Length: 611
Image (cartoon, rainbow, N blue to C red; front, top):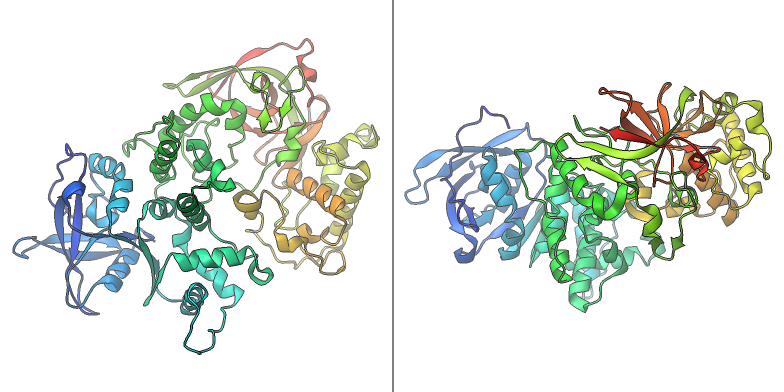
């Protein structure tokens, strides 16, 4: 919706009251009637009973109008433009004979008034907690969704009338159901969390929460459905309700609380406004601290007058003292979608499928003078602390670093999901000495696994298999773009569980690249997975002084390699305006020969400014 839309038809809220909000009364009607509503200024503490709607906005450019009537005499006051998905929800929820009182964000908040949006966002938890019921509108029926809902209903409350159980839905129908956009909205995590009572509406079908949880438990214990990809919103809802019901906090929940933890968990969730990737979880963070009776050190106040870059920079500056520079760098992704975002600030609007993996970076310590002490549940904080200074006004991060070299040539980007591993091209960029064995592996082979070696023989075998695969690969193999997203969102593994199930040997080159090791022994599968993790989405390259390594996808000739004090991996940086010492982060790299503190033997330590 743009600035040409008509004036908001509701009365001005008294924002000095901390619980002022609006409700809408949905006027009765039959299918085909235009939607008519009344808007009521209320206070949460003294309001009448209402239901809150949770839905997906959909395309903001596809707008339908609802008529707004005066609350006293039904005089026509004007209209409000809402998305078609919201309009469809109102058509579905409208009663034929009675008024229905609802709270809907797109209608009850004047979206064009920033102070009101800021005020109302801070009330969201109370609004959903105070609702008599939250309605989760999933959309209209499609892809056999009615069969899915009937199956959930029967699973939770089996029939006792002698009639046979309904035919189970196909796995395709189940996955299509959970792929609906509603399940992947970041606001849904908030809305499920604070709902005292809730019901799902999908077309003409209605369903309570408990059947979803019954399926969740079945999904983790039955072989035939165990690989249905359950969205994070349902995972979180189940964990939260289980801990409330039993007083026992589930293991996964222990990694959720805190601003950084919940941001990481919801990184794959979607938001129409990228600022909501932060604002939607603030009440969750506050609730977790209250549950533990601990003060919240990461206070963020919603402010829609700020740009997304400013919001994300604010969050980064808040969590940086807690997680340190290494923790912040681990959250960076390539290809930021946010204009003017500093390169040291995580972009929460995107989630990259590419990662170094926990094994590849846990044993190297390029930015440390000695090997950091590894503890059972983390690292020695005396070793991982990185000295830095941060200027909030200029958004410049000042760090201590050693300049190493510049990139002279880089190879093509590896893409496992596209069955593209240019190992032959990469090999040609290395010098003969890089193919000479050293401690049973050559420097080139060590680069491909980032020195994460279980058995040297398995590294050699994995690389040989990939090269043979390239020679025999079927050019018509399907591309599976989403498979690797499963890594970051769910399992911490590059392989889906079914990818590791033995299915009998097949001719090499006839299956996707990620499956070529599935019939091999476990140790070989683990090592080959490390090679794929390290190289996927990255480039092989050579530097001006002859070093070789694995570099981020955006790296290019002329980029600089620095070792930053306190970071485990070298950083590729690009000179920025403002002098030689001002750079932008491009991404972490593995560079053979400087991964174990070698640069601290007499090299010059410089002050570096990161924009």
